[in-house]
Figure 1: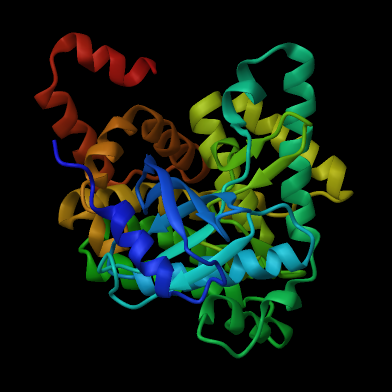
Figure 2: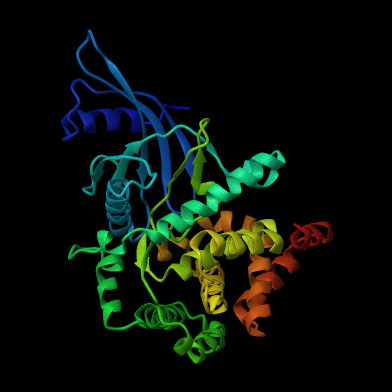
Length: 366
């Protein structure tokens, strides 16, 4: 198989880009992730005079999908400002949004050392689990405690700039997400979710936002790297936003509850409230929003293609691999609302019809 052209393309680009590196060479180039939203590569950038060459471990993140330009710009600005605020994120080197050299926007950032936190947090030695679990929740609390106005300006990213409207309207975020759900259910023909949206509308008056926050929107231990010294770095900021922090917490509870069980979900919530010093109000509303986001993103992607939602082509196959845990998200939605969604029921009916009996048991036992 021919060698990937990306290393030479990247090296040629860096030779002319504004990165303040003399005679740059790309070495040890390799793919490290191909997820739902982007392709991620690791490489070493060697530069400097012949007598004093320096090697920098870096990451190249290439953004596919219909909203690649917006997503790459959002992550670049988020990482810049989070780093300035002292929050533990990778340092960014550059953002490229022209078509050169890959035909897609990309970001280059430092490659921080560390191990993905998930397994050690829930399946490592007991003492280590306790330490990492508290660090995991503490970093979420710390994120929500940052001054949200540090991330709001008059730039292009309306996901942050629009948050200033909260000053006059504490229902800004709830109304915005309800409106967005109506738009998506109509555009992508998912009417079965509308009773759930109506459930949210009926409870909208209970959930004024007391204070906006910087949020990650996909905060889970696979997006944290733990270092040998015990410190952790938070990665993957493509969905960064300034909004109601309960949305961020609810998304984390939804993901971890579906992956690790209700006991873990309850521990996260209890620890979050202990560390933040306050009880989370009307959490059910935001958990339902999180469940709808998770379920609808899969049903829409499987119906019209993941690229329509800004994800990479081929993400549909990975989504099908997550159907067992997605079932637990659906169970949580039903427990909170008492409602069913025909599009989700149809997804599982189709899956059961196309699987052998042994695979059917596997689907519901994972």
